[in-house]
Structures are given as structure tokens and as C-alpha cells.
Image 1 (cartoon, rainbow, N blue to C red):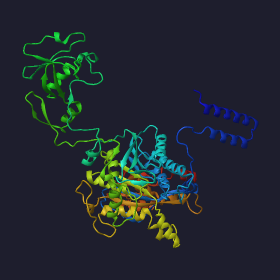
Image 2 (cartoon, rainbow, N blue to C red):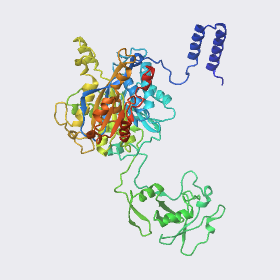
Image 3 (cartoon, one colour):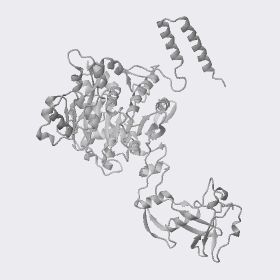
Length: 638
């Protein structure tokens, strides 16, 4: 059938070409080309209007940088990696992280604003509500800009993006993700967050949310030892306990003629004792004509309807399995018998020592002991797990940890931990990023996961420091504005995320009292805290074209933070040293300090003597990565 839209477009383009021939001046050609490009824009898929952002306007005249908030740092074990909380617009932060973590992130977990129509999120410093006719396009534009950078941050060979959403935008988000990650595996999980449900006027109550899972490269869901509540709610698809297989093939390809080499008798005596495996009988030969010794009783692969079938193995393969004790005989009923064998998966676990051989039966078959083996499962895509309840294990848990209520609608800690576990259980050094960090659930989940299995997973959280609409109105009425200390201390980054992080790590709430209770399904007391380190960075700007100083000198002031977040360390100039000028060289590279140095970075613009360079080479120095600010310096001619 003809594509009517294409025919119409072709006619319009043909007419535009006529106009170009008639109007050859530059201004007309530019205008006509713009019309042509608009006509040829994408005509299938998710189409929306993209909006400019404050960050992009700022980038025209400024360079994004990190500044350390030196008063906000917590070190509990100097041998462990440093994690980071980043305060600022997440698009600005993502642009900076692209310089330090391109293709290095193992897992991104995000819980973006749901765009409910209430004053639940801001775009370019203005609330987006249900009366905004561009509400959906603003949300999609916001998400697309961030996901474009997120895609470049993810390891293309093996990583996962997990994005939580509800029914307001899940259709749009699904289309957007499908377009942006065309080669990735994509799945949507439905997860119950409130069994009682949230009322919807004239609609069914909402009890669930959705998780979009985007798997890049070889990333795969891992089997886990699931708790009883998982097993009670989810039909598993991956049981790992001993499961024997039937020797007679069923289903497709199960007839004699499908595999003639697998149709043969197995002989037993009158007491059902195994004697021997016969030879294959070719198609066309009546099985009843096959001779056998007196006292031998043949068993054939015969279906219940009397038709001839086939065994799973040829005679020589079955003999080898029997010799190893991997075949288990039942009771003979005429020409048939139930016969099972240990499939390859079970054989492999026996070889690995995961399943033990506890002894042998009289017929020589092995007795398998799987009592010490942890059964591993992959669940389905409907999650109805009590510990994922956002009220009990989100709001109430957060209030218990901080010591007072400071945040509405945090995610269940265990819901986030479970989502991460399915992809990070075997990646104990993974890098996790959450650039809609909110109350800090993701980092809390990473710390809990590390404590359970001894991992050293690292986390970067990015969140703005917006205050609630209620607080904004109250402070504005008092003449207090954004940027004032009274305003900033009540923002989500400083009033919720940082306190939650500190409290969960130290095991004490904001009042200095031990946090009561234990983490679910563990004997880990919340008051025991975590061995975890965290530093606090804030996004900032520096002018692209300074008038009274060199840009390179200005950017040098922010190299430390870039190296720290890239390597999850602290530049202490003892073990991790940064040489920005010749003075630093003499200050930090003396005989007393040299023996402690593990990492050293050097400004490549410094001129060293041959002896100085020799020492640096012995210390395996590295130059400051050009990716940090190389393009900006090149544009400035430095």
C-alpha cells in the first residue's frame, strides 16, 4: 500500500526545491532549508518539543566545576574508597562526571520526578504543574538530556540502568528509553509499593510502580538466594536444587524416527536389576523381533499412547552415564520404566563440589546431598514483596534513622537494595551512580549490600538542594531567599541526604542517640553503622574568559576534586599526591614522604630537571587527564 504521508512530503520538498531555484539569495535558502529539515524530521516514535535549560545558558559563558565542602566529610576507614554526594543541578554534575567516568559506571539507579501534575518538580527553577501545556514535553526534554549523558557514562560492555517511574509517564519513558538504547535488553518490572493503595479519584487505586531495566553488553540478571517472602509471592524460573531429568524424550522431536540412534532396549532381570544397554534399532525393524538372552526383560522408550519414542542419549552415552552412577531406574511395567538421570547442570555442580555424593544405591547410582547448597533463583517481573513497602521501609525507616520526619515518599531501602543485588551480587567493586538521589536511599542500599557480603562498591549521589514548596513560601514571606544560609540548610541535599548518610554510617541519629532496630532478614543492628567514607562536593561555575588571570590557573583549583571523584580517593598529599607547581614538588616529595606515596598526579606544564623527572618516573606518576578541562583550555588558547 502507498505511504500517503511520504507522497505528501515528497510533493512539499519538490515545491521547496522550485522555490530555491527561484529565490537564490542566502537568506531565502537558509529559511527554506529550515522548513525542509522540519518536514523531514522524525515521523515515527516519540515526538516532543525540546526545551533549553538554565545549565546550557550558563555553559555559554562559564565552565562547570566541583568545589569541596570541607566541613562535610566522614571517614570511618581510610583503607576503603571514598564515596561522594554532589549537590547541584544534575545536568551540570553529569557533564562533569562525563569527564571523569565516561564508560566506567556499572550501574545507574534513578528515581526521577514522576510529573504527577502537583508541584512535585521544578524545571528551570519554575514548578511544573497540571496547568502547564508543555508539562510532558518539559519532562521528556529534561529526561532525554540527562539520559544522553548517562548512556555515555555506562560501561557499554556490561552495565545496567534502572529507572523507577509510575503510571503518569511510564509510557513516554518506555518509548524514550527504547529509542535511546536500541541495542540494549529492556524490561519493565511491576513492583508493589503500597498494598493498601493510593486513592485515585474515579480510578482504581495505585498499589504499584514500575522499574525499567536497561541492560547493556553482557549484563545479565543474576540468580539469588531469595527470602521466603520472595518465594511466597513469586513463581521462580531458576531453581538450582537437584532436579533430575527423564531419560525418555518428550515434546518436540520425541518420536522414534526423529532420532533412530536413540531407539534401543535397556535390559533388566526379573527383579528389576539393570543388566545392560542394547544397540540402536533402525527404523522399520519391529522391536519385538530383537533377540535377547533368557532372563532378560527389555525396556523401550514407549509413550503412554503406545507409540514408539526415543531416549535422550545414544547407547554409548547412556553406558557412560550409568558407569558414573548418574542414571536412576524405577520399576518396570511391561516394556516401560521410569528412568531418570542427572543432567549436565547437576553433573557440573557435583564436579564443583556444590552437590555432595553421600553414598551409592545398590544399583550403583549415586546418592546426592544438596542440603548445604543455597538454592538460587531468578524471579518473574511482578514483585509483590512486603519489604518493598514505601511507607514502612521508606518513610518510617528514614524517620527512624534521622530521628525526625524530614522527607516525604522515600523509596523502600530494601526495594532499592534488591534491584541492585540482581546485577551487582558478583560485582563487589562496582561503581553505582544515582543522579536523582533525593533522600539518599541508593547509597544507603549500597552500604548495606557491602556490609552483607564484604564488598567495596562505590557510590556517587547527585541531588539538588531544593526545599519543599511549603518551606519556600514560609521563608519567602520572611524575606529569606535562595542562597541565604537559612534557606540552604533546609534543602534536600543538606537537610535530608547528608544527615541520612551520616546517621546510617555512624549508627546515631541527628540527636546523637543510637538508631534502634535491625536491618530486615539480618542480625545487623542499625546502631552498628557501616565502614564507609563520604565527601561532599558542590557544583559551581568559573568564567570561560577571565580578564585578569589565566583560565588554567583558575581550573587548577578544581583538579583535586576531579581526581578524587574519578578515583574514589582523597588527595591527602601523603598517599595520594597532586603536584600543580614546582613548589608542590619540593613540598610533598621529600625523603620522609616518598615512601608513603601510592598515587601521584602532575601538572604536565611544569618543567622538571632530569633528576626530578627520574624520581617522578620511579613513583609512576601520571599527568592530569586532558579530559578534565583540555577542550576549555584549547578554546581559550592556553
